[in-house]
Image (cartoon, rainbow, N blue to C red):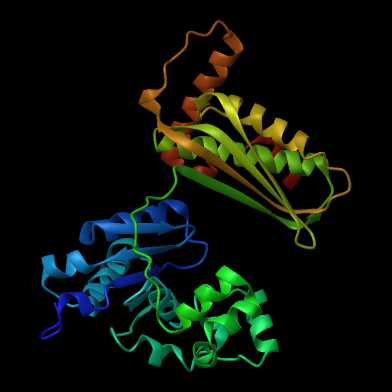
Length: 335
């Protein structure tokens, strides 16, 4: 604990930012590492977390900056992942601080009682919780810094941004944010993605890419000894629009047969005609451990043969790498 400072007055909220596009499995490892030191961790997918460290500071007998240094050292040494850690008395201050740290990593602590002074010179859009549209509105009224926002009567800010949004913005500009950090684990899901080299209208190319994703997702689930109860498919189109839909599987599965059937139903539901696709994302949701799934006796000999081939493929990939076996559709696209 910081010498001479009462526990209630120590900045005890950390906002931990991982690198952008960090793979989900590595993000989970960061969360597990945080939980080793601090019991109250809230996952903020896809690559951030909130940590309430008040209890951890008492337990370890150190100050928040020292604890942050240990966290950063461990993420780099164990996982090869550098992080940006903002420390503050509230969620807003900690999250704003972590955003001010340049990549790849670092620590920025804002002491208790100094939040409003530290926030004041920042541009208004730097305040955590102020989105681009709100920033545009505020700047239109000449409110270009957090300090100017904090100096306005709350009623004035409410007229600019609306009732609840205005109240929150006015309070947070002053460093006021009573929200507690509540624990939340990362949702049980896993994601694979594909980005096309160029915008495509080719239905065969899209189906081939989907098959690639099915193979990747199935292999990843089986490697983790998990199965998905639902699939979520997201399509990204040229120009920015997107389409997404989820469907539950008849039974939880990690087998390519089952995943492929559901994925093709999802892509058919999209009703693609002339939409130029830029990328695909497939997510397995509501994951369960594989040993929780009842094994049904199958009378489909062809399916049983495919499942045996799938097991063999997994062994080959485990020995020679994920690229040792690729779907035939991939070879056709390359040729």
